[in-house]
Length: 217
Image 1: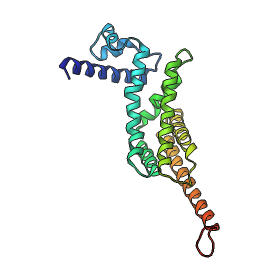
Image 2: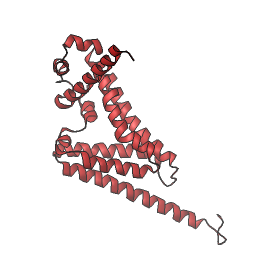
Image 3: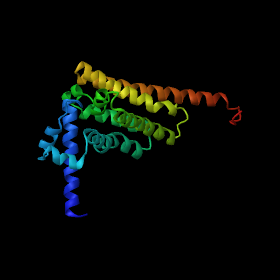
Image 4: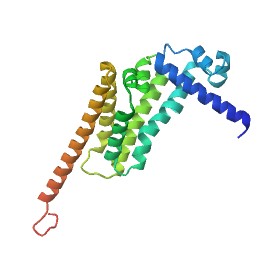
């Protein structure tokens, strides 16, 4: 790769990180292209060399910053752990351990952006919806691959995503990491209860269909 191309990619990454920080701290509509450019040592005109509009910059933040973060926090653990329930539990514990009070009060960057987007920004709305759907799908696929017949895999992804982001909202509304942690603990406990209950029911059902000779009737 040529030196100029490396410099260009490095500048682009710097812009995206600054833009993510600006949007997260100020909200989408208060985010300033001038502040983003200034934080990178650029003029606003130079910024447009990399992103020709604010929408293009937001798409870049979604695709290259937020999606990358989601992949590291969710997709990779789900892909590398053969037990999806244990993977999700580890993810929830990691959030409880590594999320501080300030982050809880600010909320989730993706969720905040979804709230900020108006009906005049349908393409950004669609991109955000696709990210949430991808997370649901990745969770569902992980449970489906584990071939756990006692689990309703087709709805598990949406239930986990809804419960997780519900915990994020409650933590932000109450401005309390304790509330956030409690909700994630509740989600983990509910998953364990549901899985163990369904597994027990499945085993019980199988026993009822076994003949005295040990052959399925």
